Image (cartoon, rainbow, N blue to C red; front, side, top):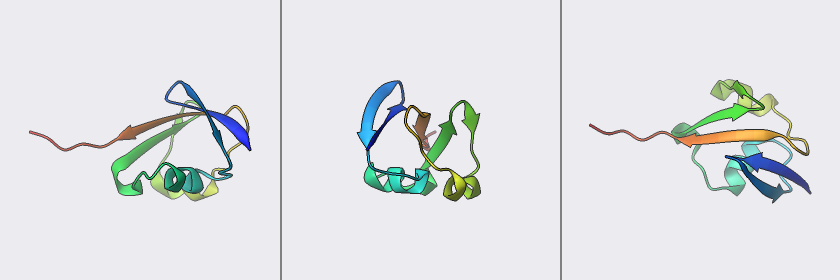
Length: 66
């Protein structure tokens, strides 16, 4: 288990990949934007991101409106 900083809040997780973390948080990949350690990621990069203790993530939900 390791600690991540998600949207400025510390969270304990067993997820070792970004995809696992999104599933753990019940976030739908098509509705989320991700920044990992200050770098905005493309969706096809998510599978290559391994999470380590102390990583900082910003997760943003996409919302349509008008």
